[in-house]
Length: 342
Image (cartoon, rainbow, N blue to C red; front, side, top):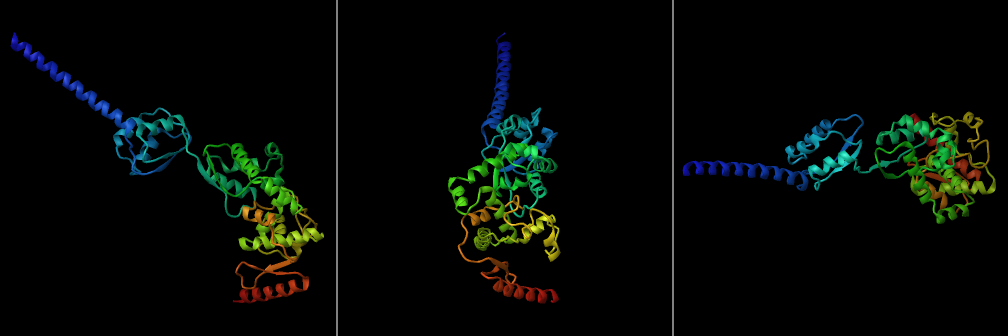
């Protein structure tokens, strides 16, 4: 009888030990999944509409940045659903945190960068569509709709008065209206009281300043000369002289011209500053901040004319009189002819 009791005691002890081992293993897994960082490097995850948890799990595993694949399979692999969005996993992230992040939609903002030449709403739409979840065609429709832009107090000719080329931190899943709301918010913040006063000192409203800045942008991307060119156009405005800006003519032809010729100057459009005095109805491109600042703080001089430098280094020669300007123009044309022959 005593031997039987010992046998059952041994069996009971073994069973208890097995339970303890199982509980220990389970407890360790729970602890690891919840408390131990499971990633060796920082990386990004994009969950697109219709994606399954298994797709995200596989992409994470093949990245080579997961320390314990079993832990990730126990957590992310068991998700029944995920929220569409952009997420950042760093070296402090645990498997359980990542699973919750995907399940609850704890997104990380992305950088939406507007840079380079943005001369048409189509270009703007493509830049946004390439970086955000929204479709570029949807952005284009929004940007071309007076009804959509009415919420910002503008119509389509003034689209580029409310957009500043910059880098915006914004949720990848933002709607088109939310993206444009952000543009409007940043534009309003940039046009503070000091800048509005600077524009007023030049005889301009913020809209007019943006319009002139877009012309300066069309003339040169050489930032050191932008205040000088802005000064030329402001001098012309003050004496009632037509701006005669080639970029406005190029705008009339949808920027399809290789060169602006004499016949193009006769195209009848309120944007053609060879025909109509003053500023055009709105910006001809999305002016960068450097051009806006150039208009607000222009160089003070007596120049009324400028043309490209014969060295083709991107700079210009400036002139006070038309006779001086023609000398500069002939020098440039001679250099251009020689260059084309070569």
